[in-house]
Length: 374
Image 1 (cartoon, rainbow, N blue to C red):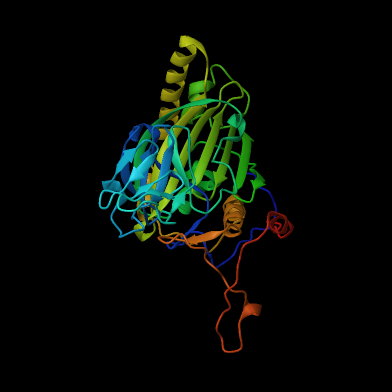
Image 2 (cartoon, one colour; image 1 turned 180 degrees about the vertical axis):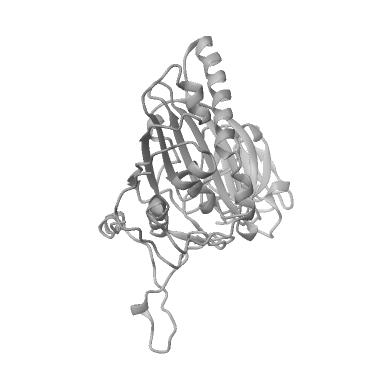
């Protein structure tokens, strides 16, 4: 196994990585788009926060905090009227931005606002941004950034470990040999797309005994591409296959109570015209699902029993430590409240030992200037 000879270094005490009370500000999956019909309202709990989601007549999905600002009634008991949501209890009505637009017993509504969260749809999934204004795009596969796509879903799953630990499995070079006997040589190249996205790319000859190689070797003799694109530490995009045919698999996870992870697999391909293109895509997505099942074979029992603690990183773990370093520089939020976590520096302690309230918000330029050479 060949690995880069850079020093393997990472923070020995993680602020965010594998922390059951922390997650990165970003886009997170909510529910598949097909499960929210026009005029329907549902309760959802995401990253410990209770929310309500509805779809108006304009077909847009809208997400609010769950409870009415008037007296705390749960808005999922309410009714969608046009593009607005009416509370069941006192019939206060809110538009898609959360502003109160009607109170039955008053001539004019009060200046009251339900908390609305940025919402979008992509790859057949509804997503929510866990901050005020989205700073980055929805997770996307770099190769398909400008393409229209088709997608289908695998089964939802729950693991007994943190989403970050599940994510590193796909760049754990050692386990591909020991568990899957799939790849014989690794040359991962890291590239940071922005402060919330990082890619690891590898082109390698594979073991002749691997499932994928047995499948394609009669038709293709060149090296196979294998690359990962990570977003917000919890969504991973896998691109794998020969040059003429790439398979795209998304594993998107969110942190749930107890430091566990709830995840969804999504299989994606470029949209192709005509009925023959649609038939081909159905076959390709089915084949992608088979490939994904091969990837996660035998890994599930690891996720159910592991107690992650990287005490002795070696050169083969370099991509993992790079991922950890990348994640530790992102904006951490508190699970349940979604409030910004603030970490004091040692030089910002007051004389009596109390920490000041330090805003860890960093501009993109400053972030780039402070990248460590990992």
